[in-house]
Image 1 (cartoon, helix red, strand yellow):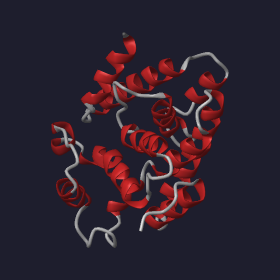
Image 2 (tube, rainbow, N blue to C red; image 1 turned 90 degrees about the vertical axis):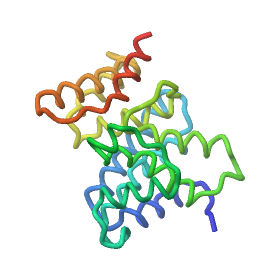
Image 3 (cartoon, one colour; image 1 turned 45 degrees about the vertical axis):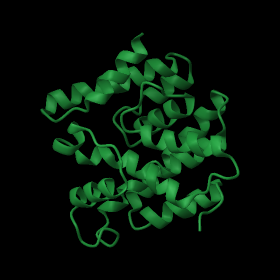
Image 4 (cartoon, rainbow, N blue to C red; image 1 turned 120 degrees about the vertical axis):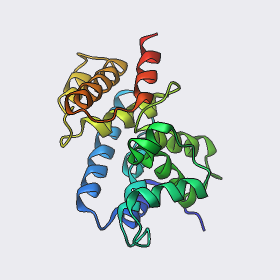
Length: 207
């Protein structure tokens, strides 16, 4: 039975999936808090922002061997995506399968909540959860808020960008572009795989 879409129920679902991981719980709570602050600034639903912020990482529950029946994280994610017809790109399959967690989180969200009361809100939240990893060429304000909040919360390297957004030094697209640039530069310095979807979304913001 699916449950009503509310912040209270979102927090219950968060603890259902990530309750055994204190670090992820605290990260999700911080992302939700920043998301609500940005939603207020940009006149977006604070309830939708809170729910998406709380649940954006629930797909990482597949790292818990109690939930994935002892399988490795990579195998559990791959099998889940195959069973649920979730789109997978070459970068995710061959370089960083963890990047699938956004779409998996969106799938978990869809399994938990009903859309009957407000289908539009349901779809906005689901899309924001799915797009928080690499963004999208079709990001709405809620998508941008969750993407930014995930990257500027106090425990992340780009945390300094939050103040430049809230005090008006940078606009929302400018902050997203800087986050993407920083991700690419860090990947290059460390010789790590870089998500090419970020580049296509950055090019869209430049238009």
